[in-house]
Length: 338
Ligand SMILES: CC(C)(COP(=O)(O)OP(=O)(O)OC[C@H]1O[C@@H](n2cnc3c(N)ncnc32)[C@H](O)[C@@H]1OP(=O)(O)O)[C@@H](O)C(=O)NCCC(=O)NCCS
Image (cartoon, rainbow, N blue to C red; front, top):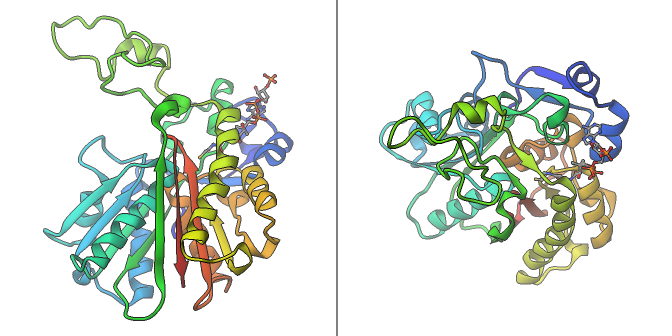
């Protein structure tokens, strides 16, 4: 894992918007988060820092990697994606690089894709990076406070290889429901030209064609930030998290009591606590670190996995469940025998 050095506390945020440490800790469990620094950090550079640590720990060189998967919703450029930018920074040439944009479920979706490539024998060493730089694009005025306070920046990375041993990724489970796609979304800038429900009609461009991706009008109205109906996301999350965790366990004939560690996507501490309560899991069966990093979207699971591993909470042969829910809506789980 890699997080940028700039730590921003809840009290720091009170200098730019109307919020409080008490409200934030009570409603989200977040105490502080890390923000990237302009001219220094980007999603791809932070991802590459995490990748270098993963490669060192796995004992592999850049030349051993035969495929890159990069999960993010805050890429350096609209295109090309962060996969090729990471490839360039790592000095690897001509291997495939795939970008995944599945929001908070991005890491598990990416893990599932990597798993299929490894199991079919197509690739032997895959570098999977998940990274986000939310802070560059959030609304830090009081108007945006219900969204901006939640998110943080950071990166995680893993190396995947085949094994003959009876462990690894047992199964992955991917779901989505696009019927509420705009409930948690950033639709501008975008190519929708005002077509969809939340897409307000943009002003007519002065030229006959184009000019609709980003308009002066959108900037003037500050309609360029993420939107979230927080309570709606909360309600759906506490249903789908338990469902997809149970799906992973049932598929592999395990019980909740067999689970050594659940690493949920760090959306909001209250969501994780409610999921734990519903599934009747003990405190030592669930790993949370949102208080230090906020919600880092695709990066939150690999950051938490790394931290839990470093603390000795992920041991050989442990049964580990990763689970995520987020924008889309998308939700997913992965069951691992470590
Ligand atoms: C965002 C979230 C913390 C808001 O908590 P909530 O209890 O649902 O709060 P509401 O949005 O209903 O707002 C309650 C009040 O708090 C206020 N509020 C919102 N953000 C605030 C902030 N940062 N500081 C202080 N007050 C805030 C609202 O303006 C509202 O005030 P009002 O009652 O005077 O209108 C909560 O909905 C949530 O966590 N949802 C899930 C979000 C999530 O996990 N997203 C990521 C998914 S991957």
